[in-house]
Length: 128
Image (cartoon, rainbow, N blue to C red; front, side, top):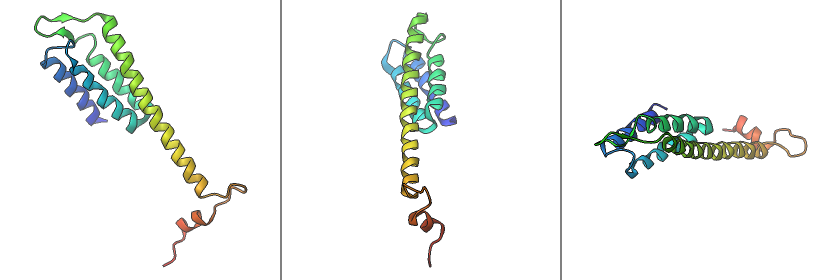
């Protein structure tokens, strides 16, 4: 999580030093948001998305040379999309993990009796 917060800070610095929100560098924010969603699930995606939205939000000017500030609706709209990406990446990751667990459970249990099968026993006892 620390590396992802460092990525949020890095993208914020990139946006600031390249001239502000008016340039496309703010779209680099989607990478740490998607990674957070995949690794930490939808909650991690939401946390990084909110952190990124606030970092590029009320204190980030449109143009750092003139210090012209952006409208509130601008950064709220961007934060909404950051949240959407984080939640969707996290939900897809969480769903995949649950499906893999379910497949493992089906592979190690008899479908009728729900008792462990040979594969489950093989993992417990391995002959020499």
